Length: 133
Image 1 (cartoon, rainbow, N blue to C red):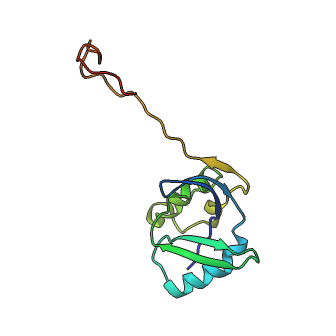
Image 2 (image 1 turned 45 degrees about the vertical axis):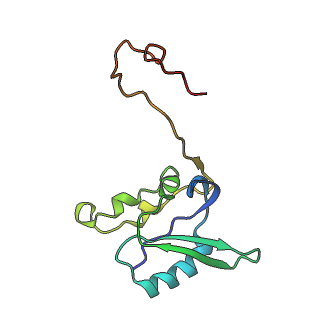
C-alpha cells in the first residue's frame, strides 16, 4: 500500500550524492510511483530516481529498496517520514507526516571540527613536519 510520495529536484551532485535540491510537487510522479508500487509490492521504503523528458514523460532510472540519501531535503521542508516508519511505536502511518513545503532549497554542508588534542604542547614545527601546501 502506497502511503505517499516525496519529490525533489536535484540541483547539484557531488561524489554521487545529492548536494543541493529543491522540493517539488509529487503529483506529476504519482502515476509512475503507483504503477511501480503495485508491481513491486514493497514491504518498506523505496527510493526512486526519475527524470522527465522535455515533454514531461517520466523515466525511472534507479530503484532502491531503502531509505534514500535525498530524504533530508524533504525533512527540512517539513516531512517527518521516520516517525511513520514505526507503526508499533506511533500507530498507523499518518499521511500528514509526509506533508512538506514545496519550493524549499536545501544544501548539504561538510565541516571539519576539532575533537581533541592528543599531543599536548607539540606543533608540526616541533615534530619536524612541514605543513601541507
